Length: 531
Image (cartoon, rainbow, N blue to C red):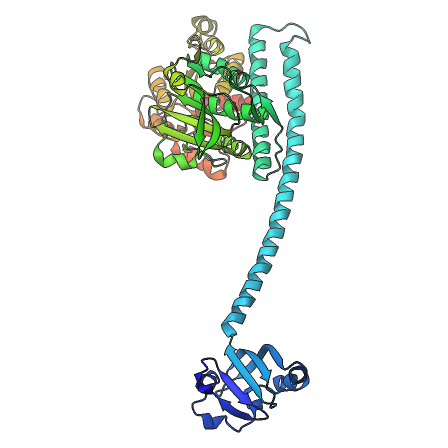
């Protein structure tokens, strides 16, 4: 009867009187005679035997049952961790049911080690997060303090607090103010994204008029759209109840999407802001769609859009500037409102970004009428002159300027950033040089061959063709191979200097550029050419 047990079973009083085959096999024995009638102590080390006699058996005598672990010894001397339960019968016999739990114990040890490592990792993560927050807070203070002076002084000068200024001075001050404001926006985006990722950004939810929210957001991009002759169209159903959102944060979301649409839409294109009510999974949402006729996005790149500091085009000839923070912040702010962001795009035709926000408005919208344009309110912007007056004044395309400087050296500036163009050319003009501008790498090659300038300032991060390739082609042409070239770049590693010189540049300046030093380098190279 007792042989029906599948678990190792041992029956003994002082010595084993019965054991089943499973128990025999567990301890590495082949024949029952090897254990029957022999002392059970042969199955354990002396210290385990003493523990049984001093702790286990007294407990078993009092309670009639004991369950625990022991270090057992096989016939060949190898050991294993034994899980066993002892039961004392009325006859005074002890029934032992046991099993090998070595693997289980190893797993428990490994689990404990993993938990200890996780605890340590969490501690380090908390410390790193705290240090990051402290760093961001300190840097925010350190950056905002001088920015406050820059923006404050710029505003005072613009309002002529310190006296009258001429048009050229006013344009320079405006450029300083715009650059300072842009830097402040980047700082705010970094801090907001950090807070949102750490779930520390608190929303101030208030009932917000939808039409006012949309039109105030559009107002932030009308000037940029005007400059590119872009048509802005708003389709906002009248009479919509207010939406409960953090007005400043959702305006920030809409402005980011609209600014991206303006940036990536060529001249004479169209940008639409369409508002609709929709239901998803029986839940009401208010949808804000920003639709453009821009360059579009390839399907393979869609999954990279919302990653912080990630841009689709990260090569040297990247055409569009930016940090890659905007869309990451858009997604986090919308998610904090328990909404979501969706995007559809066709390469070369345009994109549609839609944000879905929970909406409990009672009014219904005639969607068909809205889509047909019946409820649309159009805002159309007119075209601005394509020529930048400041740039025209200080480049050699102005015949008056050339007449004033007939013997001045001609410098070709290859640069696509408007602020850098205005800063460098105005400074060179003030130092008595003529200038000609190329906004792309290909233009730089063509102008170098047609105009044969005395010197070339070549930005490395250029659209269509990067500066390194442009330098190589200029050096390969017999017409332009002799022209001195200074590479201008924000890439400041030692290897970057070597790359520029290897491509054919005569010298190398890192950004931000010290203009006095740049002019000294220009004079040195020009004097070398004349000797």
